Amino acid sequence: PGMMPEDEYDLAGFTVGVVDKEKILSNETMQAGDVILALPSTGVHSNGFSLVRKIFDIDNDPDVLHTTPAELGGKTLGDALLAPTKIYVKPVLKVLEEVDVKGISHITGGGFYENIPRSLKKGCAARIAKADVRIPALFDVMQREGGISEHDMFNTFNMGVGMVLTVAPEDADKAIAILQAHGEDAYRLGTIVEGDGVELV
Image (cartoon, rainbow, N blue to C red; front, side, top):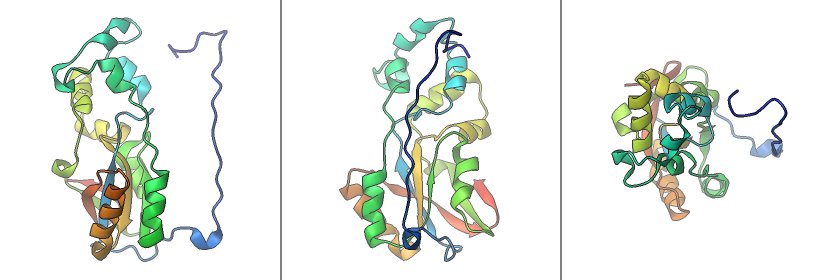
């Protein structure tokens, strides 16, 4: 609504992948103490744009896209919102070659609360300190302008985290080194604890 006139349609492309059974990741060994690693996003990553458009009232004021909020360091709002989505396939495949990865979650629509639990073993929860999340300024602008609660921000947007990997603590540094060697500024985001879902503390 608001984007597609009645006499137009949207044509989208997609891919379907298959994986050999023996290569399917298993979270059976996931346990308390395992480390959650973050791969940074480039921005909003094509999710939550209905809310983005509402926040900035883009339908009624498209010129807002040419403004340069101070927090964005001279970049226009439009350029910040349309930063291309980062694709993580190649660096993640490199990690999988050398490290036993126990879970992977792509942080898309649904944010932290809906995406991270998909990779968790039953009885495991992800504990993440909000202070450890490297949140780009764009999300601060969105939260302020939209008057959006912190919970709703983390439940809609990636907040600067495009993907998370869970590994054993002894593998965390190696995984980070591999990711960084392949262009990802990966970092420790949180830990696995006993429980259910996501705990943002």
